[in-house]
Length: 431
Image (tube, rainbow, N blue to C red; front, top):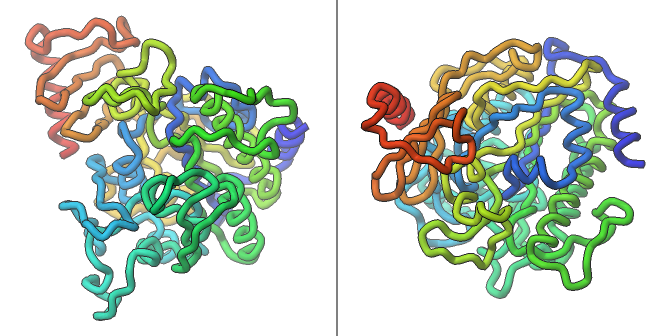
């Protein structure tokens, strides 16, 4: 019943981008690549796409932290800035005075809120940051500094990182507006409920929320039956892959519950994945968290092969029009300016992404290239037909994505010098 009800609800409203200050919700799904969204049934995401644009060539980075940084700051070279609940800082730090998505929306009068997986940290003690005085405030309030007035059911890093014992979806460190607790209730359920409570509280204000699900990241624990579609065949002794697919189904189901509750308020909804599906580690060959499709174990998350960086990417609004499918090159770096554009806020100079609003009206975007990266210096510059992939040792391989979409036949860059030079220039331009 959920999907027909959702479809009926989606078709009932008729607002558009120019209607003022609409509510905006950004949903981030963890570790779900585009190939998973195509191979595992996600009826709610499909229904949502029927009210907006599904981008078939949406790109993230190859792992979650740089993707989130690129989303919130609109920078090509997203970094990793230290584990929030770890006292040991990483060498790179956020420039706390730069543009940040939450700050921009709050400054424009939006009620802002963050739910779920943060995973950005702050590599400087907040006592050293202008505006916080000299008293150490500590990591539990770090997300507030970046523009989110409300922070609830927040997982500082992955659920396995901050716990003293084994972390899981029913044993995780939780932050609620600076208060830290150990949560035993399921993370997906708590993220949903915290968001819906806040949504009701702020009914009289324009709202902007990020709902960043921990799912479908390891550990691959089976989700509770009440957040799975009726009759979902969850095996008693399921494999990691079967549990992973159930997690995908549960996030899609919970997304449907959220949309059913909020759609009458005419929000804009943006849904993306943060990177591809977990496979074997491309350096250590550790396969403990491998749930990738067969043959893609070393071409998924943490790599810049297409299964590692192509993600589901949908933007929908209550517009009552036919579904659009766009094959433009788009990237998570575009979310910040797009959200500002949807909200009617001037896009500041210095953001490296571009607004995707023209695509919502069926217009081409004109994007010629994107750049993706992974840990250890691996990266790739991508055009519509070509990809130049640079591995951790600095070696380059060229791929003809039109003739070789599976990236099985690497070409020598020296055999195509003009194409390789152009892609190197793209790569360097994004540094």
